[in-house]
Image (spheres, rainbow, N blue to C red):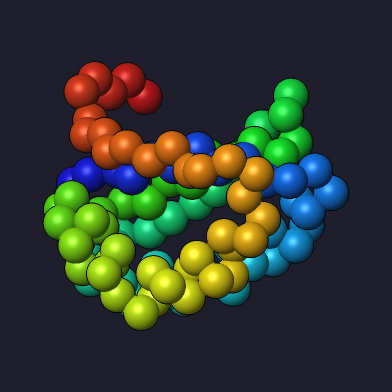
Amino acid sequence: MFREVAELKVAAGTEQQFEAGVRQAIALFKRARGCHGMRMERSVEEPGSYMLFVEWETVDDHMVHFRESDDFKEWRRLVGGFFSAPPRVFHTTSAVEGF
């Protein structure tokens, strides 16, 4: 299992609209091949800064199957206009677990 981590910065004053777009996009992730769930967190110190976490079975499920799909285009249509900077995206896997 892999986690996509995306740092998303949105323009000031568009946070509510952006979050509404992400809520609409949940269905896109739910039906994506190899997707096991997603969540988004908002920075307390920087209200326009978000972290998106998506659980994928494989990196290819994200980078190939989702990114090359019409659902990815719809994701970008729903939220891309709010970005104030290009998203920073990387993948992680568990290294150490506590409790």
